[in-house]
Length: 308
Image (cartoon, rainbow, N blue to C red; front, top):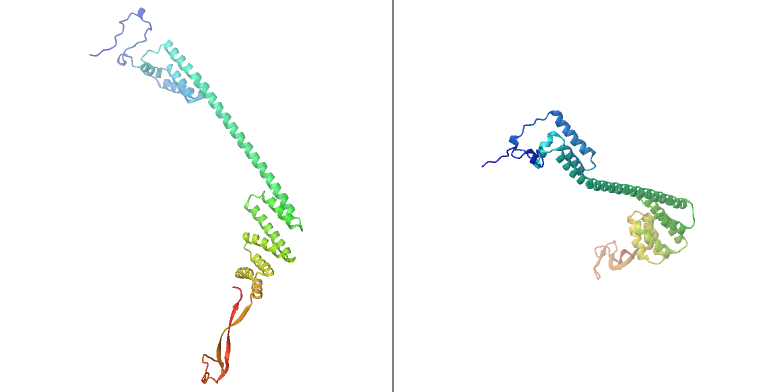
């Protein structure tokens, strides 16, 4: 059984909300809206979004604006099943406004907090950058100061090495580190030459060990071989000289021949015939076809070096 709303059953004087109920959509008058009304509705809702400070507030303002736009009023009536008389519109508007107040306040505080955090972060980054620039300037000035001291001629090699160690704490880039390393090796090499000159071979040997650990230079091996020679350690000297010879040192070859010269030793005897040939025969008939025996015990020599 189909039921439908029949108007006029209740006397107008007995109605609490006059004209609040309405019939079905089939009983309504068809409404048409012109283009300018649609554009006006869209403009009002767009303005609500623009003026709102957050998405939720914009949606609330847009919802309020649609209550007063003819193009969307019927949609609200169908949704709420109530006639949008002025009092109802004001009531709904009041509820939405009350709801939007705490939302706007919370959103405003949230935005302020975000802005403060961004400001603090930007300030911290700025302070960090300024501090890094200040520290970099101090580092460069300190390094330049020690390099300037090192450029000044000095006979105190130990003091110069200490200056390099201090300067190294301010070196950061590879070119700066390489420059200090070269200066250190040059000073150490000069220091070793002075030790060898003053016949302080044991101290020179210790410093050469440290230097070779960092720089496999042919001159370092040659000078360490000299120290070993003076300290009567020929085998160690020969070991370093072999490395120096492989690296192309002619001075090392000469010293090698001095420390480890070629020697000869007898490893046996042969029968020497008079024509220069040899024979293993020891009795009569030996060298009979070679002019006879000139030496029954001609020694056989072998060349060798004492240290390998």
